[in-house]
Image (cartoon, rainbow, N blue to C red; front, side, top):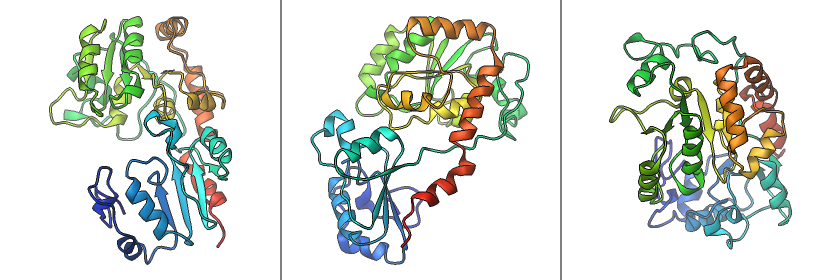
Length: 329
């Protein structure tokens, strides 16, 4: 159930920016046959406060899980908003330990369940400038050509060129300037995959105009959406220069696709790195270390990162992690 999209039950008042929130009665009717309700971030970040209040009222005394991706004080615009609502029959789940500790400091107990990924078993890297192998079927690209080769051709790159992928939206906290700087340091092409949002267009135009490297924005073909897995396959380096992420899925997605990652200084990145990942930073010294690695790639680094992801972020382990936090009613 959501305010938009291909969902089973549509309540437009749940959408971000909805003119009117749903009524408590509408919510109670829509949720009447639900044994458990999982609230995805709606009661966490106040993007639709009216809907959040209505949902909290409708769920009072009912089994529910509030899944927190972001919290108000983690965004400058919402720093003065109160903590999420709570109820004796609700469980709170965060996607990082930082948020769990911050909730605890406000009297709300929570459990951390990290995002999970289809890690697979990993493969030996093939020759020819690629550091990994795609998931089954990923070589069935346009006109039958390999995905990496075909997509790089459409981007105007040969296999000798270095492609730095930033698989994010273009908004201030994604630090596009940091991604562009890394690409320039590597004498690479910079590819920003996501859309421009939150009025960031003028700032992005200025950054691109001043860029010291070739830049690709979005899809190389108008009207054609590039699957994110294909983008990882085509690139040589993934960059996530964000100043804030609740998790940052590219940290693990880059590992699964056997690509080196240059990651920014957002707080949760350090929490994830502590599991044992060997990632690169954004400073000059780290950029030089990455350039050296690209000249003579060490598959062992990719193997070790994949082993860490498999041990701690595997989708196969997610059911057990979820079961451990669901209350026994």
